[in-house]
Length: 147
Image (cartoon, rainbow, N blue to C red; front, side, top):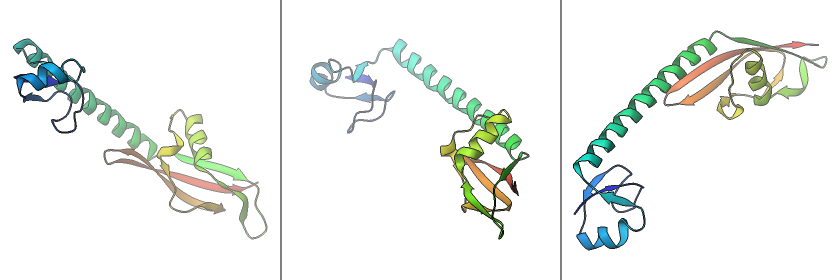
């Protein structure tokens, strides 16, 4: 019996896979549980079209993320914070502050994507990496001034 999986099934495969199973297993377990549907030519064609559309959509989102990453590479954020005599900050520049700074410039970047190699606890120039996944990263320049 030829079926199309609608969900991930541990032993059989991922959603959208077209597989052969024993008729009793398909008819008595997979289909009633909503894990699969019977593979008809129309449903096979629909699944293939859906997979193609999903791939196109993912490629477009990847391209748009790359464009945003290229724009973020040219951004420089400046923070003015209280500092002591030896140029040490009272506190530090956090990923939330960087996220808010980018938000003010018109780029909505969640703080979980921001990676700072070292804690920013003194005056000077730094870089923060923004990792969008799929190998797409951006490097934002950060300058910390004394108040």
